[in-house]
Image (cartoon, rainbow, N blue to C red):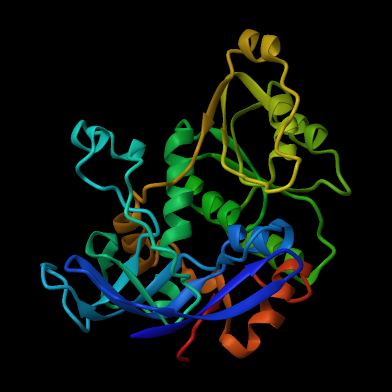
Length: 343
């Protein structure tokens, strides 16, 4: 069995490749019904200059074939696909620390932006009653869940979220539902149709403060409202922006870092003395292996998170170059775009 799939690297160099699927006894072949575009995919297409990388890992699909040893999964089931799943057998998994598993089941090099993927059955989460375009929001929502959980925002506390991309917006929505009394968000610019759409959604989600750092002094705007600083900062934007997090965090507050960069700007200056004297906690968030898929799916199904607000554009193979280019340039009012190969 073969699949047509998308790979890409710097300068929007996108290739369509044909791959062979040869499932083993524990493998499942999934027909991709929807795959969201992640910031990691866009980083590859903007900055990664080695061999083309597989594009897409936010997958919802339908099982079409199961290996001989697969139990509890059968053809016809609709599933979300974890791009990295705990193995369940290593020392950390067996010791109740699955978040530290380094022997994970992966997508085996198959891009989610393709017709089919082949994965271990353990990567699958069965769902019903959702549009696949909405269901594929499960993976980024699980990332946002990990960020909010790690931040441990005090009840009625204050949190400032850096970055108004999909992860930042999902984090803002979840922070409110977890009991934050104040939720602020920042974005670098409001000049493109994409940025304008995302900031409009931030307002719709009830963000109490929206700061455009190209036009406003983030530190000054936050300090006007919180002279002693905010309880928590969650950085979903590139690492360089984290410098300001240390300028607005209160004594004893916590900063969570999850924004990545594949350029040379991921190293920032840090005054360790100041962080120690301010008793600042620094957390990192890397949502591998996948942990929160079940909770994320339930939030979408219940309507607690309205996926239709986030999944704004769909595209197939023929429009991939145009839509992915628009994601990078901001020329369309994209919150999140979704690849639908069979639509």
